[in-house]
Length: 192
Image (cartoon, rainbow, N blue to C red):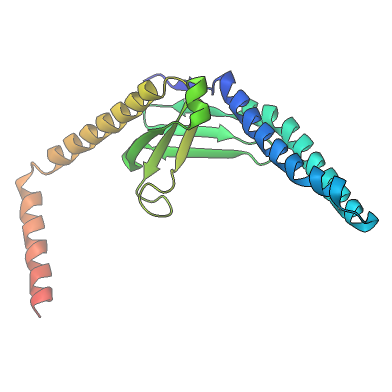
């Protein structure tokens, strides 16, 4: 299978900026009334400093969003799904098909407005309760159902390949006799 490289859609960057705008608006709506209506100079100075720090952080985030967007890349290969991302700290995640237990698709309200979705690739070893945290998240993709089907096809293909190897190995009668003897030895130990 030729590797399928997927980049998030440009609308994903727009979703990130919409969320950024909402946070900016809420922060300004909180800080400006205090800055205007606090009667003493010390109170105005404190809220002025808080507002300045908040605006500086928001400006840095506005610069970070396009840089982060450029680094996002997903790759579906013949044996695994991969994610590359990161502006300052690079992160590369590889999830082999034989470890994948579940693939979910989700859409938030903003993602629905832009026709985007997120694919959650989960493994049995992922932290938290089942389904609480995905091992790999493919955010900002448009053909999320099609990509989910490609991943699930890889999982099914890998599983059937593993099953064929297993059944081919157990066709030898000596192996089955050895397994039976080992099970009987385990049973004797457990009975004691």
